[in-house]
Length: 286
Image 1 (cartoon, one colour):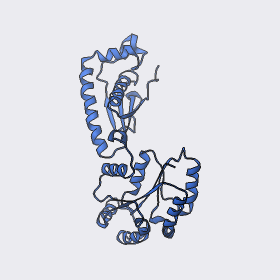
Image 2: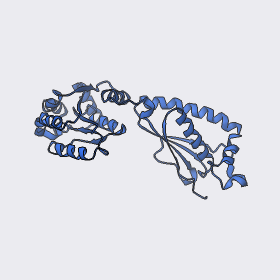
Image 3: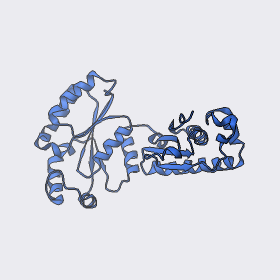
Image 4: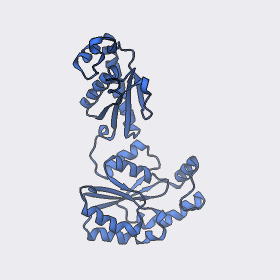
């Protein structure tokens, strides 16, 4: 096992979000691991290090009295020669109270929020006292939290590598994709479908590409469009977004949207973004 991060801290401090961030970084994540299963789980990880190379698990006050044996668990890790780090997420009482008020959630210890916070600090102190890193999330945005975790965990990734981009071509006649963050309509481009020699080709074919690229309107459009997308991606990264789907649509999803999606994907890859391309409707009518 290369890396093991034990995530703990106060309820409402961002532990769950932190675990999701570790997952985005490619870690195997386990939420609220029962203390009794801790040692057995580590043995499973050691026997299958290909799958469990990097692991992050959360342990918090929900496990109750079992948390008193937390230091014993760390002794077990040292005996097994596991390289681990305990990261404790914290926030001020006033911030925790405000977050509970905004979400209208009950405190997991079943008390009033105020009493729950006080009791939880006592229970969780056994973890806090041995934490390798304490992250105060009182004033952190999601983007700042992601950056902080990458530094604390020693994950060397650029902002562009945080964002997983999916470019999708589709045909409006088959419905708009529900999971798209950005949808752009390219039906203003003169349709190759009405050129007999191109009708049964797709936006991947050289003849279709040449037909579209000859259009002045397209060249102007793509210069502006690619620059707009590049500019907004910086903002998405800053806000901590991990996944972004850009959907490009035309009538049938075979010609114009396919070509524009291919060209946008090549553009984004040239800017060192991680991009996956999918042509949803390219086979319709082929």
